[in-house]
Figure (cartoon, rainbow, N blue to C red):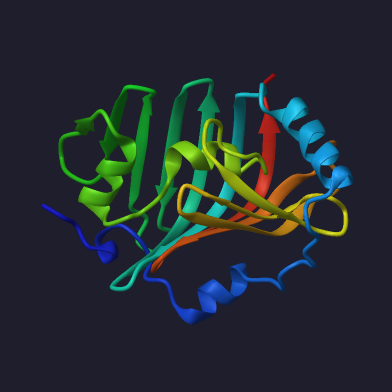
Length: 204
């Protein structure tokens, strides 16, 4: 049974998306400087697999939209992805590892499966590329997949196109070394995932 957004999330309005939006950065074609910068970024961050973000997430498709406050803990292959709707106070949590996923807060009993993205799609109608987003949220290319990257004037990724998704980086925490994304917008067809990060922390 599929559950519509309003049962768990705040319905997204144009104003809510406007709060997440920002002007797209200037884009620079791939060149030796951008390739070197991305290689340095990936060398510094690819092995840092224990982190937490606090953010606002908004998801939409052709029919529905929802938003909430996100806390995402990543501990190697294990993860906890918790979304709370501030107005309704309802919360759901997706947790698991590479081969197992548990979705709590949708029904009285937890729902389980082997594919977290399938659980989100079937139960919430959320199209979130969670596995690859683990890399994209850090401004990295997902491993083992072809990609095309455009950069901003500071040689940071502006757009990553990979696995049918277009990931746009609208703002950065420039005081971090290396800089970390602040606003990450992902789209594929009519699916939209927008994450505005307020806090980054690493445990390694």
